[in-house]
Image (tube, rainbow, N blue to C red; front, side, top):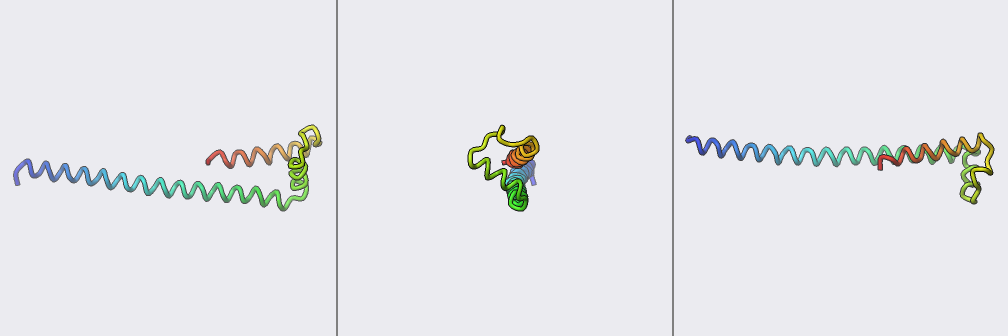
Length: 95
């Protein structure tokens, strides 16, 4: 084989390797996005379940939906609502 043929084989090999790496990166990115979306969904479900199983928290949430303001809650209820809202916001930061 002459030098030009060897260089051509090397060039084609490098291009094929780059294409393969690009495909692997795309596949990995898709898998990571899927896992992230599933984790966010799981966390949101946990938050909804916590609100559904805690009667006090559910009652406070109903008051919020009915238009109550922060000043309408005692300090303990206000803190519970604040922490619940912050938990929800933290969970959706990854979206």
